[in-house]
Length: 412
Ligand SMILES: [Fe+2]
Ligand SMILES: [Fe+2]
Image (cartoon, rainbow, N blue to C red; front, side, top):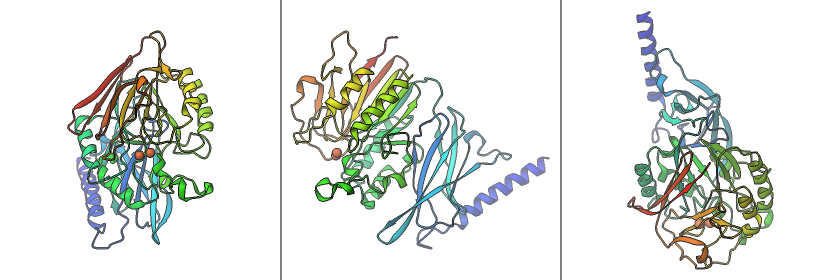
């Protein structure tokens, strides 16, 4: 029995070694099936499933992802489960790019897994992730405002500082304008280079900004769609309004109902859809993310009608926190209700705008009467820790110094 186990181990190690050794590396054969841009996304059911996407320059026709409990990765009698991938082909500069995605399902909650993606013999390295708990365990996630410019040279250090500060954060929420020109794949290349291996192990939640769309000034209304790179290179929930799959969606994570809105189009439909989600919601905390702010601090004339459209829904369901970007500065409101300061007795919603990249705008004074904190300039990241009765918010600069913080307390 012992000999059999030992030989199985040797066979398993041998297969792994052969797989690694026989995959052509860049330079030997310029086009390989080697996986690149591997990224995890949060699913609608993060306690039982996990999405992963990657791309290759060619495919042999059987791309897949393999997964095993991390505790069993080195166990001789265990073998990983294989999930065949779905593939979408994107034509770029007369080159075909293959985007593959897998949703791992039937996973155990609160469990560490190892996974790899590719096609034998060109597998990625084994990476780890942890599923969400089914209970309301405290957890931390990070929130970033616009990245948009100097994505690799400047923003990479922001991501590294964020990881050093909060290595155990369960996912990163990026609040739009991840790039400046959404249809330009070179900018997404910078994005993935700036992120490095981090999105292989920390799932991303991506909110579409206006820069993930074409510039309205130069196109017809019919051509106004999110970049055709968005859906192939990410795998986000498809439970939003029709036509906004993967760009407006909701999910629940350990006591929080998260709603991601797409502020670029069909906002009326999203207000109605959000109401249906919140009517069914049983989670004690509600956090909404939208790129374009409800109370814009920009001096530009791009005010939205969100105060009429979204605020009544936020007020009705006592949304705790609204995370936003777009204005390239930092502000945090007092708790608000009906577009005014909430009274002592009334629970209000706190609206935050933040910025992660080096592109900054001056902060306007239009809503100074609503603001608890305003700050021009700077590249920031935010940690949000959600406990049963307390939400702790901290904004950090690149030196990892806290530049703003507040708590929201829930009294049951
Ligand atoms: Fe924007
Ligand atoms: Fe922006």
